[in-house]
Length: 383
Image (cartoon, rainbow, N blue to C red; front, side):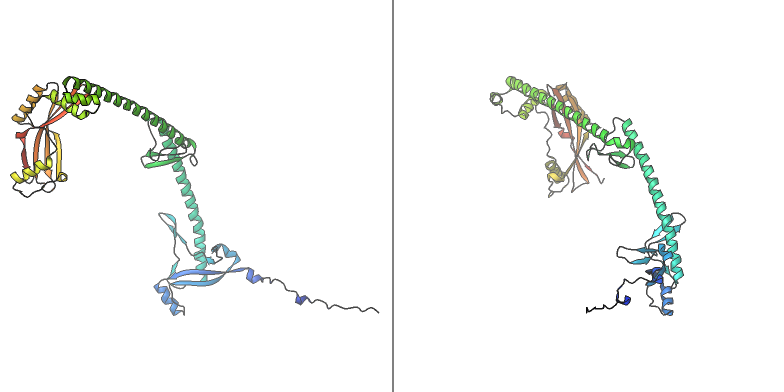
């Protein structure tokens, strides 16, 4: 006889199941409402048995049909849309205020819902206005860029900013409102063609500049060779034996030869002393001997010199100018005025008159200035 083992029936109550939230739980969401209380509101809160704090945070159960009044951050925290809040301004339209609402009395739940609903409504209007404003600015900027681009192509002489240098992709154009960046990756229409054209003009200018520099360099080298040849010929005729030897060895300084040429061409015969840059020494002597400042020391960096063509001349000064003009008839003779002053004694100045003589001789422009000694005089700025 076979034995039959009977298994006990599994009871339904022994099976574990995931709990299903009831209908009342699914229809609400736990939310935090944050707001501020003014001083009157804090007093009212204490009178009503509250904590009287300025910052209030209360929990709410928001039904599913009002979830548009709730925001949830990345941490899963749900808050009633009370911050930022949005207000309607008569001049600026809808404005955003990054602060919680302030109440003079503890608000009711309906008050908080009404504030959140107002924020929700005005938030949509606020961002719609921002989108419209950005679109308007974008259209205006696009029109401006097109206008600047058309003017750039119409004026062949206009150039982009050289620093940074224009490239085929980007360049900066100077406008009445400052410099404007053009980029082939973001611009449209005619504005997109500005960087390649600006780069082409920039490269063309560089080629022209290089050609001009090479031409100028060639002219300078040719002039230098002409000067060397002129000096060689002059030394061969007018130089001393020692100078001729140094010239043959190629060690005669050009400045020495030019000085000798100038001496011979001007032939002033030592009638006037040469004007030298001895302003510090000259001014110090003047202050000590003429102004009684016997301990004054004037250094080279203490001297200010203002030089210009003289607008007036005494009879003696004019006679000197005429005499030099007769002796060097093909030279340009100008009376010069040099006003020397010290940073330590700005009220006193010394004026020195000189005669500047320049003459074109071969490839050289010979230049020399002489001092008109009897025309020194002092001025006192305080008088």
